[in-house]
Amino acid sequence: MIDRRVGLWMGIAVLGLCAGCAAKPQHSALLGDCKELLVPQLVWEGREEASVGPALLTEIDRDRVFWSRKKAVGSIDAGTRVSVARVLKDWNGSYGHFLRVQVEILDGPFSGQIAEVPSIAPYHPSPSWIVEHTLDPNALQFNPEIVKPCEELP
Image (cartoon, rainbow, N blue to C red; front, top):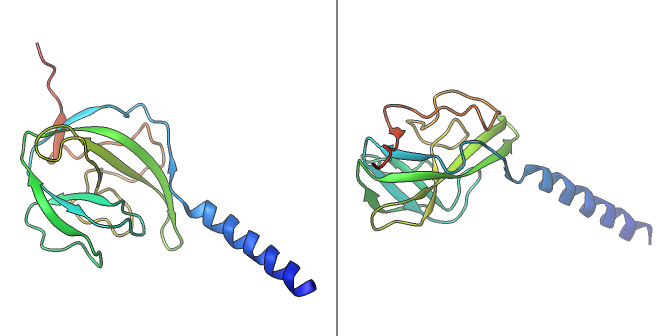
């Protein structure tokens, strides 16, 4: 009986630790912000891995994404609009806490798809869409060499 209780408590402890590792959505004033790509991007798809969601955008001339099992499935052109869909707070044992950013692609054949963008996070490729590390979801600054704010329609 004692062995069962120890196993139960160990299981609960492991679940509690794992729950602390899961990415947590953050409220951000940036949600819904429209950005226009200044450079084309590859669209990668696969399963969610470590600190990267199931879809990822990267620079166009990349031939692989680290150790990832993701495959390039197409590209989106400069001028494509994306909207900030999610800001997630995540954690890695070696790196600590960090923010991840996911966007919704608004134009072209991948319209409606949610994709992770490279940020200052473990296992994210360069160049980063985010210019400096912060844990404040309202203080994220986007790389002006990769995206710019969308122009308002007249």
